Image (cartoon, rainbow over all chains, first blue to last red; front, side, top):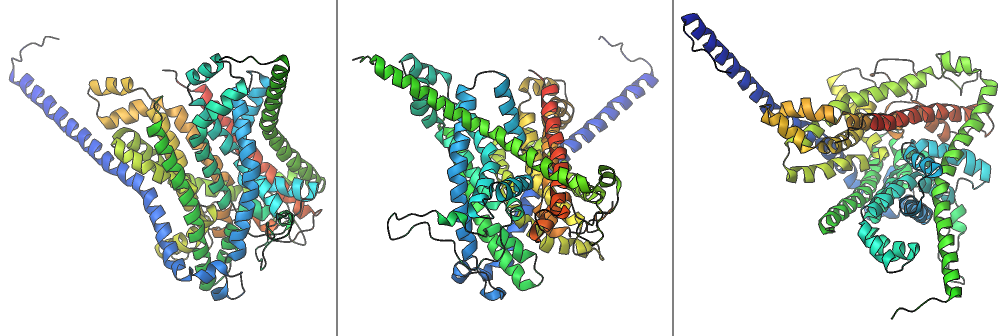
Length: 320
Length: 302
């Protein structure tokens, strides 16, 4: 827009004022911009600071208790002699059950939904159902297990019930991870194999699944880590908090060398042992709770770190 | 050397393919069975509960004392505790998570983002019982120094820690939504002379709002269902209060409290955890459906 040359003094002053105002406004906008850079970084770091505070607090309170005896002793009335032997053995056995039910079921369901499912009403229902299950609070799974497994099917307050419950809990995580990894495998790979005369299952087994394995593995690790840290559903089915014996050993020296009687044994797990100690009054048991939490945190965050590393490696390697 | 399959081999192959599809379908369908199992179990025990307790007094009575000799079954105190802790959690996580998402998506260098985001996501990998320990034995004493007279069990500290726990849900999912906004929109805004901050708030944020809203809904649903932190740090007394400094029980904390005790299987107290569980299930289901709808309804197609 061609502007008339300012003639009067008043017009000149007004123009100068406007320029001044806009300079001030721009300075203000730049200042907001700069402050937000700082504010944003601070807000982002607050979460990390909280994580650091949590870890340091645990280390200070729990490190002195973290001895070899702590790992090999049963719980005890005296805090200084108590350990987590029955807890970590219980966690291990429960996760064994969870993995052997949850992984095949979740991967199979993921393969079906991504590679086989026809586009119809039933598939829609299954898909919506899976995403809903992912949002159901874990304690609801505990109520399901209490009402249906413990009292309905009579599986008792056992390792098997606990493992099954956690398997259902992590099923959506594994299904979603499987689907995403399979979706990332390019169609050309599939079509090439089909074109050479492979059957659907041969394509899936020999080409799609191997390519999707790292992604699926990431999902499985995240799921297992989640299951290891879960407390609420196991409290609901009535896991005991004081167990001074081990379940029957899964392996034995006589034929047939394995037995499954441990599946029916009562149990405790690491998070429940930690919960039990944290809810007792007194500093001695708080130290035990901190030490058990360190062990738990090391396992779960370690698994998470592996998953993150796997995912990063995967992203770098995948150049279809 | 293309070897042909005999008719017999082909028949067997077809059979095997069918069997495999059947097995895979059964696995997928079993997820529906889980939902049916959940709904059936909750309904079955709740029906038993509502035979003893009229629905009206369940929803309007202001006292929840199912384990007393003279029991009263008003769900309001538990609902109130649940909403209060969720509100505190959101008051912590919403500003922090959203600011972090804006920063990571619009300001941070790619290298910074690639390091910070996974570490931030680790916050959601910490077992909840560890968060409970943190709330009771670290955050509460810290708050007590700032607010003398704060009770050892309170909703505030539990809510703050739940807030920290759900930051990654808000930050990570919102950041994904913001990064999905096409670069052309940003370029246009910057070319018109807007600053990066103005672009972020007035262009990227509105364009990503459906994903952000869905992230919030998911985070709320997590906070509502969170159990261990409140069971450990908030005290387990049902308390009809709007003051987050008070101790109170949530739906989830009550379920834990009953499960730790030794209630006979057919008692009304036992059935009551399924009744409040049903309420919790319906709440989270509502949030999840709402989040699903938000993403569908407001998805911008670029």
